[in-house]
Length: 219
Image 1 (cartoon, rainbow, N blue to C red):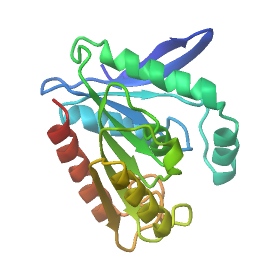
Image 2: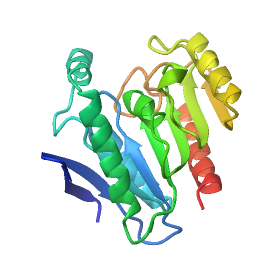
Image 3: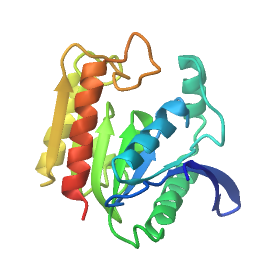
Image 4: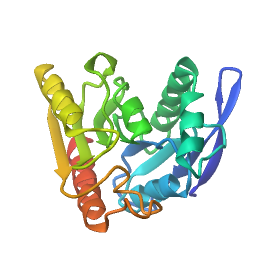
């Protein structure tokens, strides 16, 4: 049942990718892709979550477009309309929560880079948030659930100073925060289709921590 489905948001048509486990606990997880778009790397994240027993849904924030270069990715991400994207993501959350396997229970959110920033903006109906190499100013954070973060030691986009500032600000709000920094890694270290950046050992550890965290936090 792992396939794309239509998603109507007001007068706008979009799509999402859905992966459903054959068996298992069947908690729901929203996956928010990086600035590359909903590529195979992120539908694969959904497939792996389903293998671990989760119902995983990933909305396509770019309307079917994907990027193969940084320049293309920057153009696509810069063209996003904030209000429309927010509406699309919240509609995707609702689509996941009404599924019979979920029945309104709190869901998890896993966001990568661009998607990680959007993950931190979600609150209602979210029971656990996981971000990969993404920070935002604290005033843009609405999340109130427990947060796990995975960060690279050498990240040209997310310096460790930003990571530390976000962690401190989240803790100052009284949130439960668990941030991990992976030595000798760079941005995109968890994405297998990014040669020169992908770090198999760090990716494996981050993934296991993510699965354990979701299982612990979601009812």
